[in-house]
Image (tube, rainbow, N blue to C red):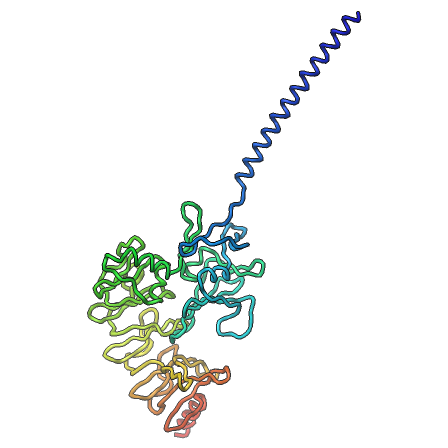
Length: 399
């Protein structure tokens, strides 16, 4: 009986041992599977350092240099980007005193780009020219994170005239027009082509349009150096705001064409120049006489003036003057014109004459203690423009 019990006990212990071994084996397998699963998960979700190349150089990682919004759109910090590019960054609105943390502008040479938090509206301005501000609409709002302003990578082309690509290795590459000019110049050095040195024309490179000349004739190439616009123009001027070119042919006639070369305004003028972006006005000329053309090609004024606008006289602190605002709330905006050595005004809306070009020798604006004042000079006297207008009106009434 004891022998039977002993054998039964040994059999039970052996069975328990096998169960323990089996349980340990199963636990080991489960543990191994769990470890493998964790490793796969970590590998799939590991955070890799942000690799960023600017003008061909890899930059050191900066905390929160790039971020993503809830829709997966990628943004880059404006201030850090400006520093990488060697541009100036200022936390304010251009030509406004004091700091404004909701706004900023970036300066590249004489080109200004201004931005505002929670807005997709931006402006550009070119110092040293008579042109007014150009306004653009971005795809995404400027956003803020940890007191820094961010712009979407997809908006860099329009915002700062930068090329932004993500290469096949997932590396973000941002290139300035200056850098791209140097790259393309090296590739074109044996072709006879010369890239336009004009900074405004070089903006087109960010859009994939390279303005070049060969033997004095201008054309536009793509990044593979295939012709987009053939070699047939004596001059080309890229107007980024209107996304077109002002061109002239070998006969000296000016017109406007699209980026693909389609005629937008016929080449029939002796001269064309964009003079105001707010109202989209062009100065056009024929036979040494000037007039004003609207964006749709219709003439706002006749082509019969000696000049349009009043040229700046820096020594006298006189500003370039083109459009006069509504000074009394009833006149409306007007444009300065010159005829037979005298200045006058025409209505901005209709182009009709408001102040004849008969007595005024100078009609200009000056900045006096931060306020723009408009003045005229006639018969060796200087008067405020509004006072002169009222004087002329009273004389007419008396007559």
